[in-house]
Image (cartoon, rainbow, N blue to C red; front, side, top):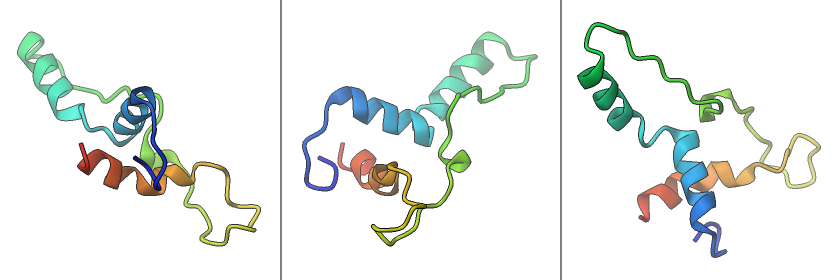
Length: 78
């Protein structure tokens, strides 16, 4: 559930990927296979790259990604 709305598993995976939940596991696997190489996080989208949204729902700055503000609760609920 996200903001009281049932969400699909695909959306949950996208949210977890956006927040890098699987990053430590990917780094461990990469390092075990290529110990001499430096791990680079190659996610296409990262939460750090998103602009902060306005709290005002009528604001033009509210870009439709308000769900990302609540994704941490989604991830922690699993």
